[in-house]
Length: 166
Image: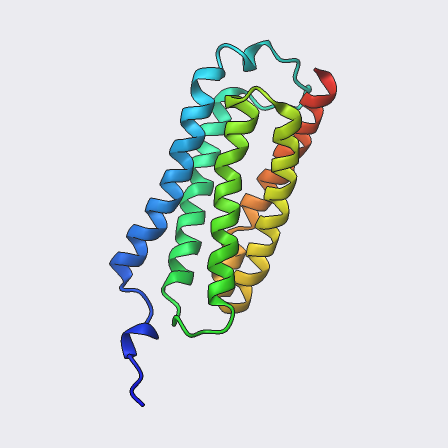
């Protein structure tokens, strides 16, 4: 019986980088397309809590968080494909990435803060699961996602406050 060595090898670093950056960039682009046109119009008219940061803060923060997400995903993609837990870690990362993009669509694109709240709670749970799974196979990849989890927890409180105020 012959084993195909390519099926067990980690991704080439360049391919892993392209996949990681491409996936995270796609989520960011979807989020921006749903968000940006609605900030000066619909979002500006919402009542917001006193602790809501100024709009200019969100872009740089999300930019750094997306970089961290891509870096963590790249690290996991580089792990031996046969490593226990790698497949589950990749799957939950993709789920949280889809939820990340869908939150912007739900909240901003659909003008639906209550749906956004449901999505952001699911997103936070998926991020925490991703951190737990990443940490088992690459502790650095897990730790890099902690600021993301913290920011989304804050975003959850903001989302809840906007639901309550509107």
